Amino acid sequence: MASFERAAEALPAYLAALELTDIGPMTGSPLSANVLREVRLEDGSIAVLKLIGEPQSAEAATLAAWTAHRVTCAPLLDHGVGAHVPDVTHLLLGKVPGAELPHTEMAAATAQVVRLFRRAHLKPPAEVEPLQGFLSPRLHEAVQIWRESGLPSPDDALRVLTDPDIEPVLLHGDAVGFNLLRSGDGLALIDPAGVCGPAEFDAARWVVARCLAVTGPGALDGLTEAALSADPLLQRPRFEACVAVELVIEVRHRITSPHVFLSIGAPAQTFTADTRLLADAATRRLAAAA
Image (cartoon, rainbow, N blue to C red; front, side, top):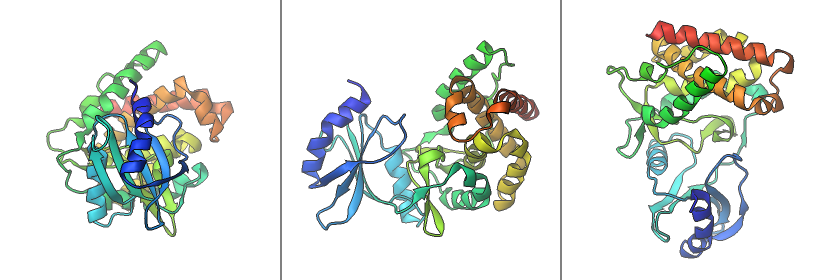
């Protein structure tokens, strides 16, 4: 049974066992394989029930660590693996008031986002996965797409993250799209990937996967300086290496799903040329990191 189907079939059992009133589905990524429902607790407050159709503890461990250290995030209220249905993970989360950042505001928010990442970069819990394992399938697929498209093969992309001197920290790992909300005067993190790795990765992913999607490759240097200035502890060579890794994945997305970028405001008239410029930027940074 597919993960989503298993989670969907488990929903009635979890609503009953946790004594929750189902309000309706949450808006989320169309690519998500999880069930997300807005629910009402016995005391009348609103929460979010997330069901994952496989055993998984990394996300809960991340949110628990952030909640304990007062990092602004979706607070973890309850969690279990197979508590009421075998092989189904549930997370009961406090609902964060707020809305996702518009794409047109993401670049300007870079310094604020990076400062939030710094607070979130704690000692990793034992349950989280090393970043290399999380990224490896995406990078292998991206390398194949690059080859098929006639681009220089970025075979060494993952190697730049295997520096033995890296002191891994708890990362968000996927701070894009629906996973960072404007909440009051600040920002809140939701839906972490449950990974650990170099602190520079979160900022690099934000710059490449969010900001460049709309601003284009000409903004890369300025966004790099904004990120590094916001957190002086970030090391420039490692940040550039993480940017290279993210550019490899981003170019793959632009080749296979151009409609996604065009729908959020990427300039259509320069889209193909911009994609090639980003590929060149990735190649240069990988060579420098070698």
